[in-house]
Image 1 (cartoon, rainbow, N blue to C red):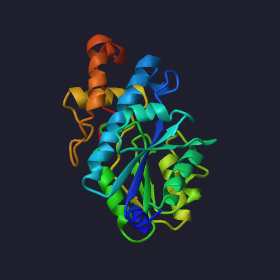
Image 2: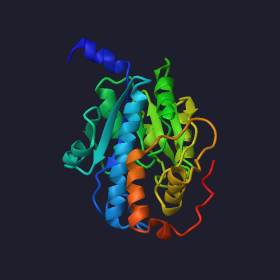
Image 3: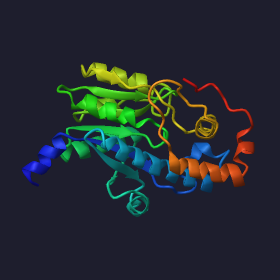
Image 4: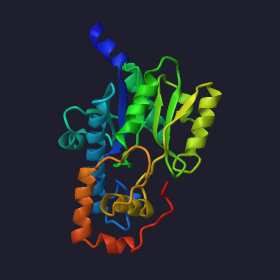
Amino acid sequence: MGGDFLADHRLSCAIAVMAKASIPGHAKTRLVPPLTADEAAALNTSFLRDVADNLIGASVHANISGYMAFAPAGSGGFFRGIMPERIGLLETVASGFGECLFQAATSLLDDGYGAVCLLNSDSPTLPNAYLIAAATTLAVPGDRVVLGPSTDGGYYLIGLKGPHRRLFEDVDWSTERVAAQTVARATELCLPVHHLPSWYDVDDADALRVLVRELFQALPFRAWGNRATAASWTRKELSRLLDGADLAGRLGGRMPSSLVA
């Protein structure tokens, strides 16, 4: 591997989406119901495509290399079939979610990247300005953690510059304690934490209502600051479900206000 290649990587932030292949019954299962297993899998594909486009858009403004850190094992063909060529693929399969995160981070750091962000696949409208801010913050000299908190107490993004396994240990995954526990681990390591603005994960029916409201009712999740991305793939798929599959009826009328920032 040439010196120029390694130097370019040291100046770049790899952002890897923690992604699952769109297998009915295994993808976006918390959205079933109100969706069917097939509909949830199709929506998962739309989310993945929008997040990939978001990474490419952010790379215009910051030194970002986009990846899909995917599972299950052997599903690379699915991702290559839907991903732009500029998005790299990284099979990431481990015994637990924390170990998957650490494996993805260390793989990319070992490849020579100066920083790594791990991004969820549940936030198709996430402003790409947040991705730019994460990469820019990590480019500043000195070790640190960047955290993008989710409204449910987790995080949509974590960024780091070194292989800090402790950040992913003793964390109660899929609970409202994840972000706070991660900050506590960073404190143990004496790592400063830079917080991005919060955003929401579309991983249950209430959040799906917020997404529909944002995309189709001109009611943004956040009325100030950076604009949400267009999420054109997701908009197309939800439009199909709203028009032809009575998704609005299944979502139950009035959209919730509980997640509005």
